[in-house]
Image (tube, rainbow, N blue to C red; front, side):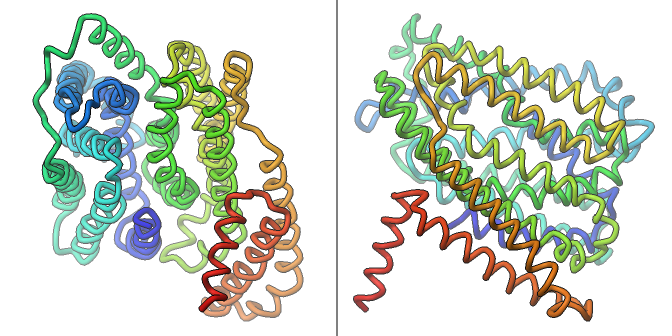
Length: 492
């Protein structure tokens, strides 16, 4: 529920405040700053977040966690200090990359280490809460709190009450507030101790943790490919086009909202099953998660796609951002792929053969860098989105093939084929609606008429697709839940 509340708030802020208060160049600036901070903070974690999830079952002993939380604070601090050193050494070469196309970045580059630190520990504290099955408050902070704080900054700047520099400081400060709120919540849980139980950390255990932790550092790019795109775009096309890409990125980002919640819940369960070598259970969990992620993410992607023209027509300065339609489609498809099969990444990373994923990470990293460098020059911002989609398809094809060969874990099922067939039928229905009914309903071209057409189309076409999934029994689990709700309603 928190994620969807965040999406609703983010929708209003992004499409009706951000596009009104900031220029495309300023939108691009905030995107490059945040994406760089998120990428660098991911590297600075030194794999801590994955280690917390993987080793928590080993450390947990009743109410004691033997200092895993304290360890989760120490390792990222080491990573951040290393990042700071690299930042100081390569500051000038990095600025030179953006000097020609995006000179505005140089004015605020000094804030990047601070923003990286805030993003780093905001995520670390959030992960600590998630392994305790307490994800609601941290999600509320990330999905709602940060957005509302950013809203204040947008409005103050858009109404000329603060300068651009003041706006950027407030924008970065929102992540500081989020970090502190997550820390306070973690402390409030009571049984969380930040002391490290050094006696529990035997030589073999430390060796395993260090090997896994530093290995996971190399896998950061796999989960942050969209961040790489904006950094390439800022350097090769400038901040204005990066701003156009950013709005499209926000739209496509909605596709992965269910993945964030279900992923946070399913990872500890998968980790426990892998630890016990219960591969039959891993296969069952993997197929269930993959199917339901595909169902939800593809449905959201479908509803976005059929309403794209209306969305760009009604947002402030929509004509300035309409060039991102192709980006939405390509990135949306990439997010469907990532949402549906990322459970496979968790399975391999929690297994004893987690080091094998380095091969797949290498393929993903090389492909996204090469394709970005090539396709941005050919297709511009559409090229960056295409690079993401192609890289993900190649990555997951190799990864899932390996899981099936080595562990017999197959994430594909007939239910997924049914989902694809239903969506294909939905696109045909949308084509018929757009050709026959849209000219009648929205023929006047007014915003009210266009919104009315979009709402009716979404309800009717989307409702038919959902009904088809129920009748076809794509997911017995979902059908069972729906039937349970119907029984409760009819009893009333």
